[in-house]
Length: 203
Ligand SMILES: C[S@@+](CC[C@H](N)C(=O)[O-])C[C@H]1O[C@@H](n2cnc3c(N)ncnc32)[C@H](O)[C@@H]1O
Image (cartoon, rainbow, N blue to C red):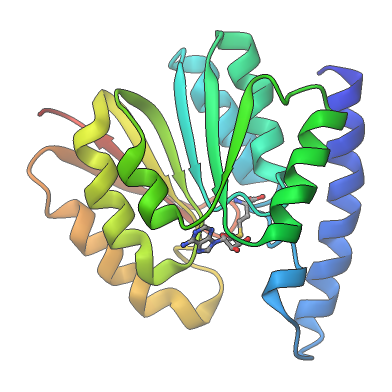
């Protein structure tokens, strides 16, 4: 991996580990101040998925400070693809831009600032890989908006299927929602906080 990218990822890995300690200590915290990153297992899997499918158009819904975006961008550079991320919190958007710039990936990853519900509507297809990682109640809308824009064979990967526990019931409903689509094949992957990987099988 490019040393600049590796350095920024390692720095954020340290920050994420400290955040997780604070979150698991049970005290209250403001999610707007936390990276809430998917972590290296899920981000690493997405990186491989982009590489193995030669993905050109990659979308991340909920970019926070850009941890997973670094992994997506690193793979997109290898395939000649591009990543569009989105984040509504100003300070997180600024940090994402800074982290991507320091990693030398600001020409590959664009992070749009604003409400992802509007931004996804404006994105053109065909999309090869989409990663859902914003607030969980909105996953249904994101999925339904993005599915027609996915190329056949492209996939939508949703995070937090099994963690945190507070969203598990909601995520079960999300899994039922996507698995009911006639043109989708979907499976749960026990990676990181739990991923639902949904592949578009037809128009
Ligand atoms: C779990 S974090 C994303 C972590 C990131 N995907 C990673 O793995 O590094 C979720 C982020 O989505 C953002 N978000 C939630 N709802 C949003 C919306 N409607 N529009 C834009 N950003 C949103 C939150 O501000 C938060 O920073």
